[in-house]
Amino acid sequence: MRIRWDRIAVYIGAVLLAVFIVAPLAWIFLSSILPEEAILTFPPNWFKYGFTIDNYHYIFTGEIPKSHLVTGQLRTMISQEVRLVPRTIVNSALIALAVMIINWVFGSLAAYSYANLRFGARTPTFFFITLSRLIPAVALAVPYYAIVQRMGLLNTHWALIAIYSVLTLPFTTLILTLYFRGIPREILEAAQLDGCGPFQTLVRVTVPLALPSLIGTGLFAFMISYSEFLFALIITPAREARTLPVILASVSWNPDVTWGLLSSSIAIGLIPTILLVVPVWRFMVKGLIAGGVQ
Image (cartoon, rainbow, N blue to C red; front, side):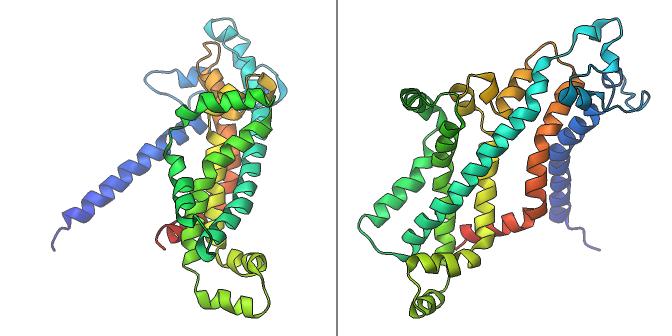
């Protein structure tokens, strides 16, 4: 039997990639339910001390874990910043949901116009919108900060929603335009013969046909907005307005936080994305691929 070394190499690469991706996540969830003394054992003996949910209990209630009440090195290793994680998850999720809806509405309108309508400067404006996303975010940080400060929107979620919408709409417009162009013209013409105008054709015909691509681009916008750090750091200096990435960064460089508390904070922060993305992952990938190959 002939050995297919190329196929074996592909399988080995896939396994290594899976381990590279899954191993850190598995470590995060495992260390979040292990006592601190189990995490720090060397050689590793993680399961000797059992499991605990004290770290999660502290984040939501403020009750100090029992392992931190003993005399010794770990006694002061507690951080009040992790108590902000639930609030910042809500902040990040609301901002990301708003950006996703804006991308659906304005991205669909722009994509339908570029795919099916004829108007002046159509090509130059399309290239300007899509190529504008190539500008590094760090180059926009100071101008955006100055604009937001001048408008009196510092420490507001509206400023982040506006910035994230500007950053994600070019990608949404590009993918949806390519997908809309692949819809047969006969279907659109049939809708027009039935008396549908451009907007009615978009809502009643194009959007249902492009649902996979809409879901894909919407979830992409959600993920970008939920995990964005730079603009959230400079636009929301007030603690109550901060988002999850900023608080997690603050917790990670705090010397008074244990591995268990840090891991629990990260695990809680992953829950909204897992609940949103995993059930429709195949639908999302299908939509993005379909939009990218039209």
